[in-house]
Length: 196
Image: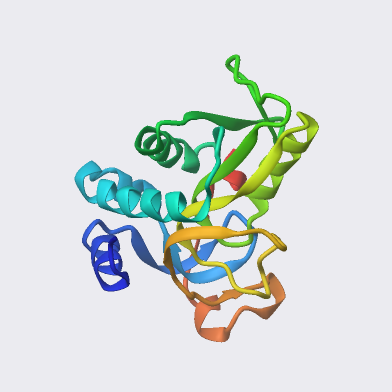
């Protein structure tokens, strides 16, 4: 499996770890942003991440029927993890701001679902996918992500397992709690939730 040191080296080499002032898709502010799209633009580098994550998933989850990924960030990772685990993989996409299944994708009743993301900060996108699982009377087995940057304070996912390739602790701030040094840096909004 890929070590923490090697994982960080890959993120820096592919410019997937950015510094500045960012509004994350959760609405929180941060001085660092993980842009997984940059990592995924180098398939050879990304494959080492996904292979390592797939091994961790196999160890932790004994039975998975389907992988569900939130669009857009989770699509490529979901596909690759599905390929490695030989599992059907679908994705949810936003329609009028809410995740839905489209393109003929379905979730079978009582099937065991693993949600796969690129990055988890608060888990909000993943929890939106949980609603789809419940509405289809299926069962959530847990969550997997390339990068877990959540903290106990900001994570909305409770009492469920999150398997990650790398855990990165990056401070995040609410709008009314932004440090002075960060306020001086122009804001960038890279997350897909706020794109118009």
